[in-house]
Length: 229
Image (cartoon, rainbow, N blue to C red; front, side, top):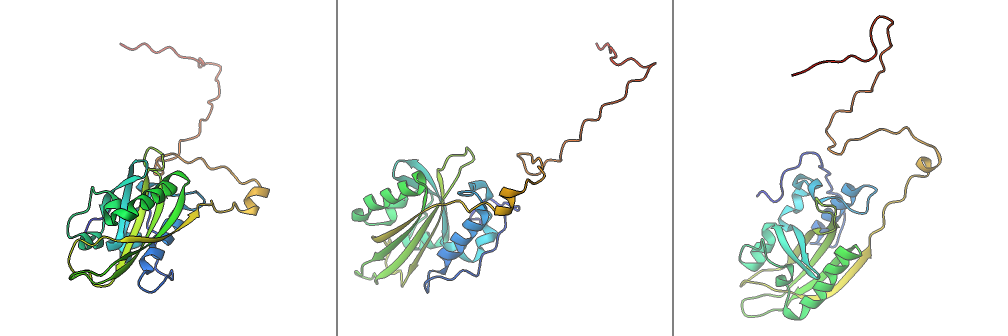
């Protein structure tokens, strides 16, 4: 499944993170996001490469903020489709939860995009006719769009238990919010000046050749007029 546009420059494998039994995919996705951002507050959407989270790909999705408290699923792994029994791309994230929990999820989305922050949501689906009880976790990690605004989010949703009759919608049972703090700058770098290396925006452009001033020669004019039709 082609979950994300292929980007061969940003493959950061994160497979050693520990988490609650059954929810390790959330830790893998957060670990990838954290490694990708480096010393920034967050990574850019264009940097995401699916190969860095290959083992968690079916649980992963990308959100686009479309209004205050609202975000739609731009891309989603197969797990959300299995839970809903339909294609979920283009749907609002709030459709995954019961009506009583949608206001809380909307507030959580605003924390992700506006503060910004990392939010982990605990959810549960009650048992019903041909619907066994399920519990779930979701993590939301903010990203910048190509325009530089914080309007994208990398997410992971994992539900445990038998799905049963579809669609399954979940109650929000709790939200953990963590403000994002940029990693501290190295003390060595702050005390000792380092050589400045110019980098082009594209990241792949060749560095410009240095300008070398030519010597003036007594019998060669410094400026030459060239007539061109």
